[in-house]
Length: 458
Ligand SMILES: [Zn+2]
Image (cartoon, rainbow, N blue to C red):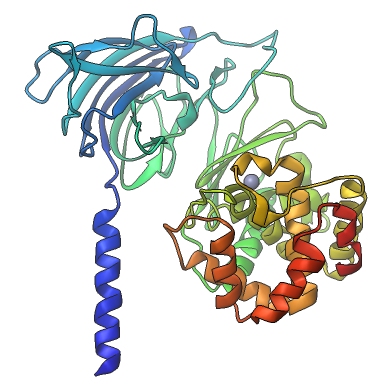
């Protein structure tokens, strides 16, 4: 009976948490792409908008011009943000007005817009990044960060509501294949994409082929069936390892997207980004990374690169880190998972090599100990990707691999919490690490400011 009440209590907590969570907005409508001149036309309805009152902006790529902004009943709305206003990232920030005041965010809005973007073919640009709407004559790539679709910005919580459910018709006369993140790629020139699962909308359209396999989908990869199988098998190995290690299902089938950036990458310079479940890579081709004789990647770093990106399903998607240790729980955890996946595949030699390389890198670094971090950005790149994972490896050595495995599992079971040092302490405790033992570890490792002091504990 007692158990029953506990179960009921926990159930109620969960209900509260779900109802307290914001519902994702829904985007429906039509996108037209004129591929040969880089022209994009959108006509969208946003619905299921949250009750943000006047604390919101509507973000749209700075290169897209609003035609009309309308309310529910089709009435044309006045709006501000088109003159003398600040950009937010790569987007202009608009807000409807009535009687010289911001209009409270209605539940539905309609927006039509048009814009054209340069096509880089022979001579490439001096930069490319995830926020670009990038055309290279063969493909158009527009990630959610570019705001090619209207995105509501929650001012009070400083949050872009990028995850949306969708029902979108795309028309692109010169496109062989069209893809919107989370949907199956479809043949052009026109296709409809529907998702009841909220997604961040990465759009990838153009003259490329899609290859759909059991564990992964390849876009623009031009892999032979044998190569696709080898790649797919390696991806499956990583997902199977994560499922067992974290005792949690891998939620999505990944899509691997190969594209040519509008800035020069390759042959050795690579660039990757993730809009889950899509992993996009520019530079080296998937094909060139494979060793078909051995049935694996030529370099272990290719394998760990994909393992890292796939690890963001857990640390980034299931657990969405915030607060002071945001970067530790996002990047150090994903990197640590990739090291474990590497160890599983390539054995202890891989792990020892990884550690000795990382040790050499951090030799002269000084850091702020985790308990003293007050601003998430105090954790610089090296700290996130190299030193943070070393702390986790030192924890493994001190408390045993089983304890750190538990630490990773427990971290995923508390979504929605502030990921600060107190959170880390809670998980340490949940993982069965004794208080006195942790205090000792804190003094010897965590609170050290000179990175080389971690050497004896690895
Ligand atoms: Zn990462």
